[in-house]
Structure formats: C-alpha cells, structure tokens
Image 1 (tube, rainbow, N blue to C red):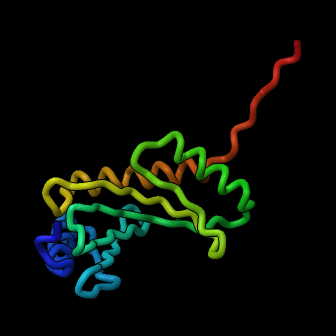
Image 2 (tube, rainbow, N blue to C red; image 1 turned 135 degrees about the vertical axis):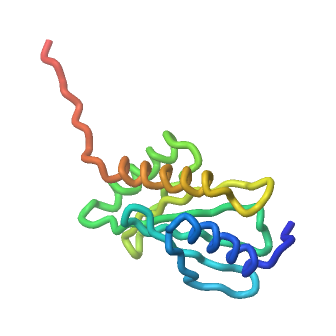
Amino acid sequence: MATKSAKNLAARYLDLLADEGYRPGLDGADDRHAVISFKSEGETFLLFVDEDDDNFFHLGSWFEVGDLELATAVDRANELNEQLRVVKTTIGLEDRVVRFQVESFLDDPPASLELIERAVIAARSAASRFFEPARTVEHLDA
C-alpha cells in the first residue's frame, strides 16, 4: 500500500497546510510514522502519517475532561459515537482527556485541504457537543 515514505508524505502535508496559512509543525517522525500539529481557530489538531498505509487518514484533537465525572464523560462519548459519523470519541481514564479522532481511507494520498478542513470541523463539532451543558427534560404535570 505504501508508495512513499512517511517523511515524503508528511512533507506534502506540511506544504499543503503551510500554503493555507496553518503554520504546521512536525511533532515527531521516524522512517515509518510522523505526527504533524497545526492550529485552527486556536485549537490544536494532530495529523498522523503512516508510511505503512499512506491511504489511511487520521486527524485528532483532545481536551482535558476537567471536573466532569468520568462515568458521565464515558456516557457522553458513547452517545456521540452512536450519533455522529466519522468522529470517534474516546476517554483517557488515566490522563482524564477526551479525544476526538477522524479516520478515513483515501483513494489518492495526501488528503485534500477540503477533507482536512472538513475533518477539523467534524472534530470541533463533536467537542462542542461533548462539552455542551446537559439538557434537562421538562416534565409536564398532568
């Protein structure tokens, strides 16, 4: 599957993001994997590049859970996983973070800027829904 090294694919992503003004950085790389970070509207996103499967697209973001009880966080993550397409929501119990990950397969890597931006919007939307105040159900007295 892999036709280009992760470094070459990572360089293509770095150029693509830089051309659009995202100011990406290479957070880590070896011969097989790379992690690219960039910010969009003040929020940090990671783009994971895998030489062994350059057709696999993986973008993620994360937030601290804060004072939210872990059981509530897990319930919210499960609800989002049932309701949303493409975004996986997971809870890191030990580090108390919620992760939002968008994964897909590509016909022709690298992902287009349009796909990257759509993934950013999907992750941001999932985060917004995760942290929105719990809705209360109003009961009508009969």
